[in-house]
Length: 207
Image (tube, rainbow, N blue to C red):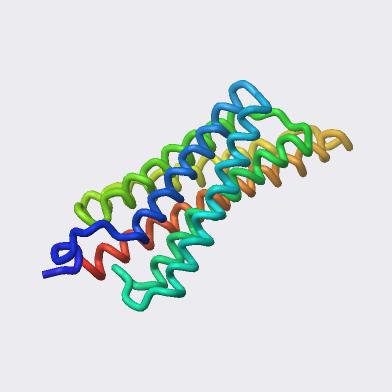
């Protein structure tokens, strides 16, 4: 009988991971709404989510350092927490650079952020179900990975289109700005993909 079948008591680490994932969903939703209609309140909302996510992760790491027995491998707990945290960090830096570079969202950015928001929701649902319904958690992780693949497809489309633009000084500056923003979004997708892989590993090890 696997660990999940033996222990149904809610675990502190899963609570903290779920909170991290929930804050990531909130942060990406704020970024998605900001691209549709820029609003300083949405900037604050994403910043708050990122700061709160950092605090939740600090607590999780402290709990990890002070707990002898964990519900699954401590390396997996640490890695999943880090991956989720990085998704939110990249969302926040994307917002920062949109403002810093004075760049408006375009169709590619909107598509990528929408896919990332959907992937974050799948990761959140996966973490929610890890203890009681690990197979369901695995299904959500697979969906998150599929969404990451779609992000990479849009990312490549965006880069190809970017280098078709005029090559005057202003055009080159715009290319550099957008490429940096695209890179942050691609990195967020990579972290989502890694989070999904860790969830899959947890299910395989402990089911």
